Length: 297
Picture 1 (tube, rainbow, N blue to C red):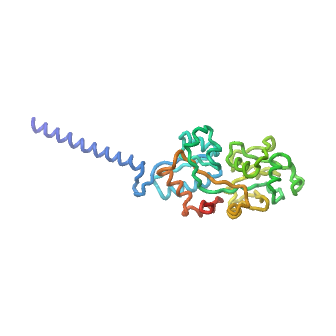
Picture 2: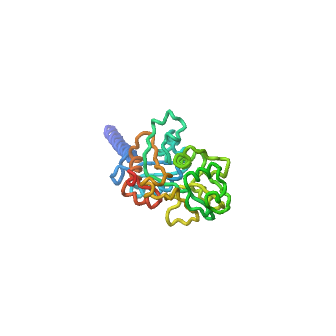
Picture 3: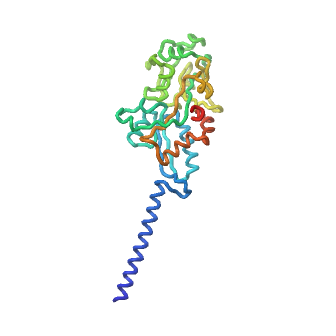
């Protein structure tokens, strides 16, 4: 009987040791999600981002390269527009809200604005683009204002051929449109009763390509060198949407791109944003039609 009790006690202790070992292993796995991984670089976990369609291509490529460097990280990036991104990060639906404008310009609940941090990750120029059948190569700011306000309705009024102007705009919720309003239209109101609205850069590109006499504005990331497109870029007062003309102040239609976070970014989110602005990634930023932060600081 005594031997049986000793054996039973030993079995119990052995089982207890095994259970503690299993729990310790599980605890180690949980810890790896909070900052340690097999590579020992302390970068692991999940990052979610949504918002600006202008920033989407760059954020997506950065996510893929970042995940290649850190296999225990998952980064997902979606569009939806700047306003969507800012309001989703405000309510905690995503880690990062991508935006073409500062968060204060788009947040729905202004009382929460103080919780958000606007992290600049690149610059981006926007081009005035026209259909291939438009012969005009340069417009002044005043002429662009006239076209989008509805005062100028035919290309012959700005030195082109006798061809009706078809305006393709972005909805008021678009961060790209806010930049267009602030840098080009200024105090002149866009006439939304003319032309059509498209809700993303990709939709604008397709619409301009298929609509005779059309004009709109488009992020230069959608018109990078080598891309197969028939769209034409119109200069503004002789200046081009290039890094050089943005940096020297001659080209007005550009903005910073922001990754908005709720509070200062930390951990894996901070590491991803730091990678976006790093010298290591700067060449890719330039290749994709954006302006690296090192060119703007």
